Length: 155
Length: 155
Length: 155
Length: 155
Image (cartoon, rainbow over all chains, first blue to last red; front, side, top):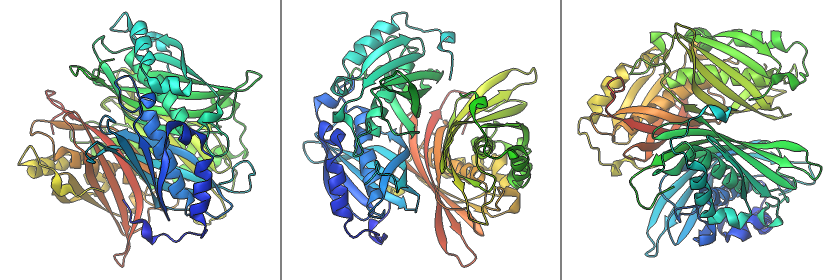
């Protein structure tokens, strides 16, 4: 994946903007996800394991992984957008590489290609066990759209 | 999409099996999703709108849509699998076509191509407003794997 | 998939426009693909089997299927775009359902959701044998972008 | 992407096997693609620009990029498979990041997660101009299947 450092943000206040937007994502609070870090082009979200989020075998449900990874990718894209732009996900694809077992999960979203209208990002989800060992459990490719001039889609 | 009627299930008790497995998906209870119907090769899940499931603009979070669609596609595949097989999602892709606004959402998962090991399914998510009008808000393409002989992955 | 009839084209001359653009796609001539039909929101391309297009087992190479399906989806989207717009593929996903064996292949691209900037289309590839029997061998989901005001990307 | 070095191939002769299989892919000869390098879990393919491979704006057709990237990903997976396994692509997704303009293209396929049945790989396509400058033009995520015991699908 990319070294995020090479991206030049257009909005110097991207971190506050992303933090405020994430706080309005009720779905993230519902599943217990929180922001670990925000850099230009890179956002990390942490999700503790919870039985309330499992599928039938007791693993984290793929959709819950996808939800947190989608937010990580979307906000990674948002860090590079203008201050007045909202971000929408056009599409994403997720590959589930291994059963999502662990004490907690770490979702890393990174911008591959920023664009005026369309931005492409990639995500990695790592399962972390009690001993702190990490295992790659999912990869995501996401296409994002910057939306401006629509009052109901801001940030 | 396909007329599901042409598929011949290998397990005559697929409906009970899917119903029991869905009941063990804690994530579906957490988001409030329920089974509407189960046929050979086709499963419908209903998800009421809830502010607890929203993203920053008040629409249903794409990950919540994806979670319910993934379950619809996975269980559609499961209906055609042998009685002793567990179903895992290898990957899925979701396209978000319109903001997920509505009173409730209807997720239809259908098998496109069943297989001994790999099954391909497609999903459609419809938003339904107070007047009962439906609007297509997302499409999914999913690849599923039938897993047998692993005690921790059953049904 | 959709009944294409419900789409209202913005450019009454979409058929000539698509036909002229397809004629400029040298890649389609190279692989031997031709247009079968053009309707508003729906384009069909035919590709005869040729050993020059095979992978190592003698089946049609997945990339050749993808190329013709991508053109079918892209031009399906183009039929609904304004006369001065060029169409670019943002991304596509293809599922290979069965070995691509046959005398010829029929690629159907259909618009699922047209948009001012972003259009979503789906494709189906059918293998046709000597007796005329059809078999679904691939499905595609594609995201397209309408590009205007760039002289090097017209139609 | 991954450092390929950490993968332990099961077939010590993977390089000859991949080279022989690639030589049987008539589609690669047709488009002019050649193997640049083969390592355990990583394969690089080079494709010179040719007007015969273009879409309507004179860029390389997305399907031609996809064909070479699919082969790079598939053979990257194949390097880690047993000597008697054939490799089939289950699905791939490609994001087109920039118009595919250049003197030649370099496709890098790398395994993200090898598996007994299912392997996940990622691809990157770089356009290289006359001055040797590289630009990332496409990313791919591919799911591959190892097939054994079928005489018509070997290597």
